[in-house]
Image (cartoon, helix red, strand yellow):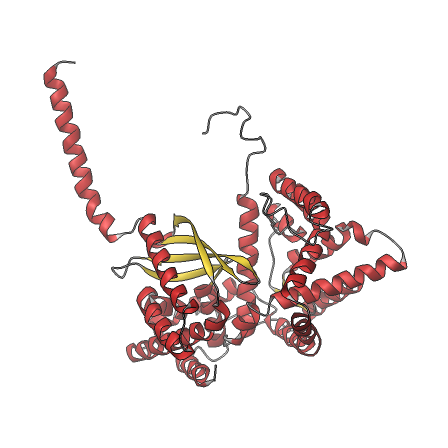
Length: 257
Length: 208
């Protein structure tokens, strides 16, 4: 995983020294407004990495994910997805707490306890039915709630779409993962296996949505950029808006204001 | 309080209510209530599902699907939105041609997804007023072997009857995504609406 992070960092540095998009002339205010809204000053470099990633995807990731969906029945795939999600719970919990969202942290903790036991090591997602639904959480989101701006759009090899905030947040999430603290050949191999499987699981989940959206697009790069941004903003908005009370319903509380 | 003042008060409040009511009534007719939007989305969804999950040849189903889409989606409004600032610079014949093409591309894309939506069901959630007098109706769309998706339908009554103007799937707006796709294509093709229309024609010529 450190190798991935390194690759990401190299990508960012490369992006820094390589080509920048030429802003439109100030005489065309509409075009300037468009340029600023797109917030993609590194577009030429990003497009190169987008093409590189598509190449890697076409020869490696996509065939593997396709084989996975053909060979493994949906029930098993759901189980694998649930187990991987459950293993990520400590990272989620840490972020929920750093975001100052006690109810979200409570949801994550209850999910981890219920699914690890009743859900047989996380294979079955029992907690959702019991009133503890899943929510995404990561350090990029945490920084967003702390007021860190996203910065310009970045497209990195392997990691895909992002920005300085979210892409560096990914590195922090890896460091926050207790499973990455454990040393030993066996656990390291198991961790690589887990990261690999996560990659395949995520890729397989995108056949339905992302592959179709890019197939219908005139400029798939711009479509991915727009989808990523909107999705991210929606996740952050959902985390921000989740201010559920921490006292139970029966607890005598102040009258509603 | 004596009888007279009470009656005066009563009359006054009646008058106030009447004035308010009269003032409000025409506005209620032009705008839409969340209940109306919810009922509209519920009906439109049921109509669509009846076609998708119903029996019949694919071609028949696609024809029926097109009829429903024409009725429930404000395609012209969505098309104008997707062209963004280039709508104003396009000539009237270009605008007409573009809307025509947009209509066909949209229908082709929807018809192509027919198979993916076999066995689809949905539940209606909350309706919330949004910008420009539109109402967003939240739904949860469930398909076999796929995680349930939160989909919000944005309904506008500006054309006289309720029509869908945007679909927001898991936080991503379909028309916003389409607009950024077109905007990027245009900026890389000399801001030429003609080039965009040629690309759309190519899309239509592709099988599928």
